[in-house]
Image 1 (cartoon, rainbow, N blue to C red):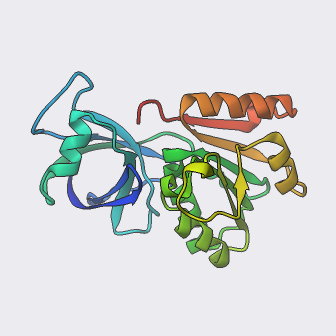
Image 2 (spheres, rainbow, N blue to C red):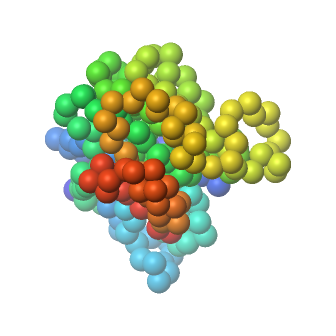
Image 3 (cartoon, one colour):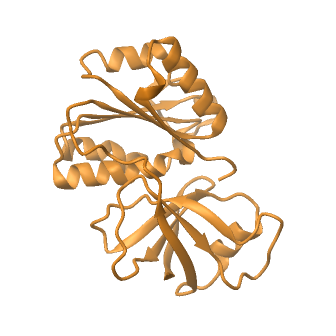
Length: 237
């Protein structure tokens, strides 16, 4: 199906968000993804003209939102420079990393870097609909400058009392911003501290493969079964 590029903006250092026209009749659940094609790109390379992006928007929004780290590839350069209004091809939605229908279990969302995109849409929908799900979002980055949507996610806590955002910064020595939150990495100790009263937690992970593998090992070592873990890897962005 067809879409158009409507807007783009920088949402963190090295990260841009893109707003797309929502095709007529298109529906999806937060956490799902789309394949996006530049039909007539200004340049190409070996990585091709198609990329997969998690949808970061609330399904109730009039437009679609994606965000990505701006690696130096032909596709990313094209997406950054083509004229607003440019026609794109969209395929999807795909994937099943979505909120469960029942709200009995506590949802623990573990995001690293641009892995925040599927969880951003979930948090927006949960706040708008005042869903009964108890949600903890642990969001790991090097610095606040690198954390897309950070302020918005923190602000959502006032709109949704069942949502808690726990940002964690690992490289504040190279940050120009103040930080009073957690430092280091998402550890078993941090999870245990924040999830003391969590009911039957169900873990969702999204981020770079190395981060996902490390977190899975942390959870397994803490006694979490793989049946209680859902994963989305962002290899190469």
